[in-house]
Amino acid sequence: MEISEKARRLTEIEKKQYFNEGFVKSLPVFSKKGVIEVQNLFEDLSARLPPNIDINKTNMWNKASKRFYELCNTSSILNYVEDILGKNFYLWGGMFFFKKPKSQSVVPWHQDAQYWPLSPSKSVTVWLAVYDTDKENAAMKIVSGSHKKNIYTHKINKDKNYLLDQEVSEDQIDKNNIIFMNLKAGEMSLHTDALLHGSDANNSNRPRCGIVLRFSPIDVKADLSVWPYFSVQLLRGTDKLNLNPVAPKPRGEATPIKPMQFHEEFEKQW
Image 1 (spheres, rainbow, N blue to C red):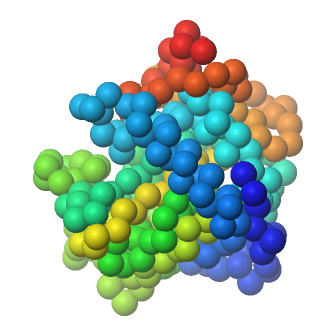
Image 2: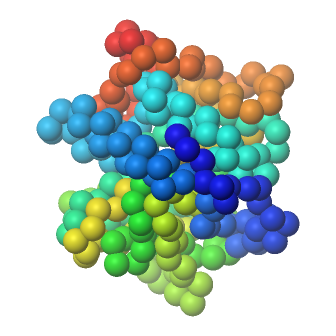
């Protein structure tokens, strides 16, 4: 996929912002031609799903699909991640967050670390815009600096429109620090696993889609008694610690149909 001429490394100001505010956004990755290629990838992979499967409820595309894995290995994406995590890190998750025009789907306020049995808590999420995204079509929203306040109280909410079932109540949200993560197609953001974030319904006539990639440094270990299907793909550097099971590079095209699956399930389909 063609890289934007504006792709670069993080500035010192952006690095400080990430650690002080928990995020950085509007990072250029793909050219106009590259954006079309990313959009085609999304359309091709989503078309594989059975009609009863919501793409938002699938994960591990990086372990299933060779084409998706190649996207994950985009040098400009990995350069930004390296500027935060250092030279040795792995990828463990890859998925799509998609909202059709007029979709009432909501991602409630939450911290990723609430869902992840990973220790220590220092994972990074890449959110790559497949289409232009803004407040009107349900851009991700974050609470700047909220990652410094440790764990917020999450409660179960089974609202039919919620894409996640745990939420942080509105009375815990510092509304003065809410920022909408507006991105042009082909740009990306980074945020920490402790940052409060979510997204509203898509009230526009435009689709909204983000490709979400999960990265951790090699010293982060999963509790396999909680996540027995967890496995990693080293994308930069070396892993002398070997704390987690390793997933192979996909050799072909398989299709995830659940939030979590063992990578061996995909190998049978290649």
